[in-house]
Length: 114
Image (tube, rainbow, N blue to C red):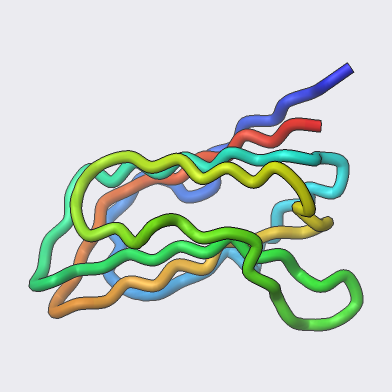
């Protein structure tokens, strides 16, 4: 039997600087697939860019591998990122925001399937 878990990973807010979710890793060891959804409701600044990587923590070392990346975001809209295998045990998001006084208002959710 398959089970599904839905999570709001990044709550809605206006973000202006780089950050990650490594302080609260998601334990996804029992899941085989994941869908990540981002909804960007506003963007501002001169040539703002938003880059988001889904990263997997190495099980015994202190480093992360990039599992998948969203297509670079420069304006409002939604995007879906599917990972169909090799989630690892613990994952996080690495968010990079660039441009001249950039700001993005968004939230990000995930659905995980066994």
